[in-house]
Length: 66
Image 1 (tube, rainbow, N blue to C red):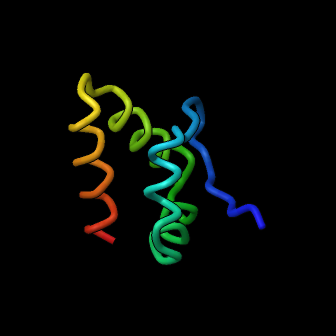
Image 2: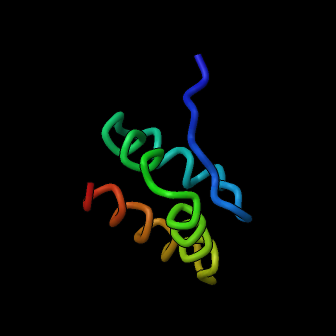
């Protein structure tokens, strides 16, 4: 069964971000409830960092907020 993770307006969800979003049903539901523009901003903000370690921190912060 494929779990659906909605994308942004321009940006697509990366594999590592998808994995984080699928870690919890609540996180997945909250993510899919965001507007297209809000998801796009999260994706852009997360993928624009230079270091993979920073991306992991941002992803885990999003999940902890939820």
